[in-house]
Length: 302
Length: 229
Image (cartoon, rainbow over all chains, first blue to last red; front, side, top):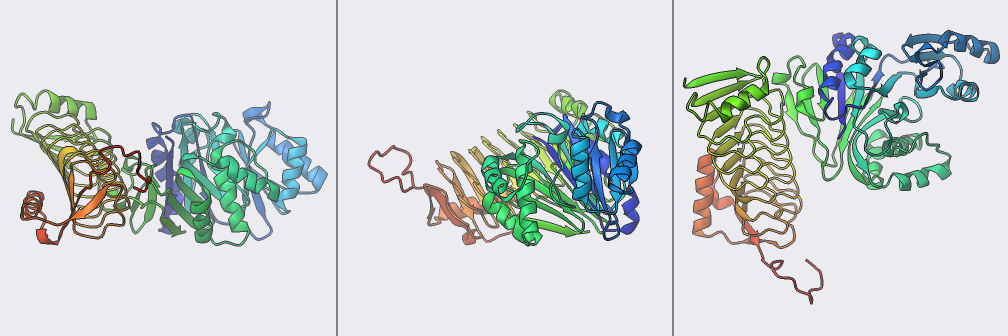
């Protein structure tokens, strides 16, 4: 199974309520995905030259007691990088003024058990094991604000239940993907990408789709062209929901094996695996509700 | 009591279904209105008495499944498997219906005013389905008996491996499945379509429909066939 949810607010006033509106969407998909949950939220971009990382400390010995301020101090000492740190439980957003690769490489060398969840100017990412309600409470999802987000509740089928195999997956900067379904050729995709220097962090099938599409974007494709190549290369069952700083995109496989329903009003566009995750949204009774067609692209601008 | 309302925002679904299975059968209500269905699964499944159920809003999976004798109206969309394995009675979806609508229905009438997703009427075993809009790919796959009237278009592989069910389509058919073929409309076909459209409350010219039925070439294994189905 697995459940996916997406929410893009068109009305600027709703940006402050993005997390509050989304939490019941995520919890509504608990039966489809009770073992892990996560979301990526896109907000105002940092100034040019500034980047941020979402980092997870749950796999370190200190766990939620990880010394984030100590890490910030170490980075300043060793690399001369000043960091802003926002801490939530075993998760922190680190913002800084240098190329992210410099910081990531240093973290990988000195704190190999820290897991980098996302990199970019607009994206914050949270994911962990636990029920959607537990994960939402752990990271205060109801307080999140932003223009759009993608979320996921996982019922593991393709790989183990671990925080790093939860969704969303990211690759590159400011790109994330969640998946309901199963791919039949993830290792084929992987064998195609690895010789190009693309490194994988897990054995999860969704990671292959995420890295494939991000590779196409990096090679110069626009989102639509990348998705078209996805239809050609990615085999299996999928509903994919993807986020970029200014877009939310949805596609389903040619057999539409995995469900999705969209509700759109003047204020928002909301997507979920099932309508019951949309039923609480304001004005949903008068929303335009439809099922996305198989092998069609749906892209909304933030 | 003749009319009753259940508000699923306040009453558990199990209470509604228990009422429909027990009290409604004993004559406690002839008409039940269901408010705030909000995509819940299994609303009004397995009913076996001639009660009228009106669901005001969107239903989740399997609404009206295994229906026998009841008349169920969904004033919204329906999730996967609406009216699945219906035996008799009527299920009317005023919005769109998701995948597998009316799958293996053995009797009764399923009316969908909007579009239906993929595999509508898969393995139909005797029920009738009228779709006001279009149907997705693989509809009527292995349909054995019953009739389907499609007022819009059909996707790929319509009627693949069809047995004795008959399909009528007004719009375009993206492709026919293995062993399905267009056949001329007889007077009896026109009367059948007219009758089903009338029961569905839809206004189309029955003469504008095309008939699709089985070539029956898959009925017997032919070891000499060149496998070009």
